[in-house]
Length: 113
Image 1 (tube, rainbow, N blue to C red):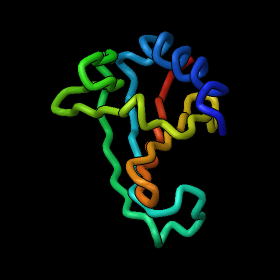
Image 2 (cartoon, one colour):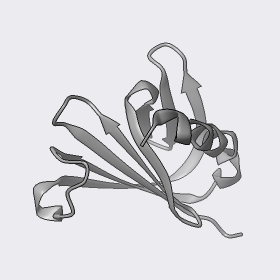
Image 3 (spheres, rainbow, N blue to C red):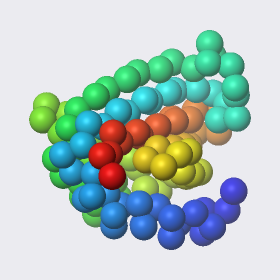
Image 4 (cartoon, rainbow, N blue to C red):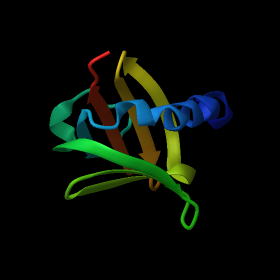
């Protein structure tokens, strides 16, 4: 996917993320060597849950950040290879760190509206 085709969607996501402040937030993070792989056994997964307090864009290093109590998570803006909305309050970022290393970040907000 061309980065320009989803760039505006990413900007819109972060411009509207404040509506999720106070919501339980789940981040599922996977490290893999094939972003298209459907075999979960070939990916290392981590799960974090927290209440979203704030978000920002860190210009030094070009990082999107989201924060909760005792939780801080960054997504490298210049490494985003794909972005999509998976459901009403679910989103997925794929960052490419080398030719063969990818980080998949799935964010799910337990939003009451």
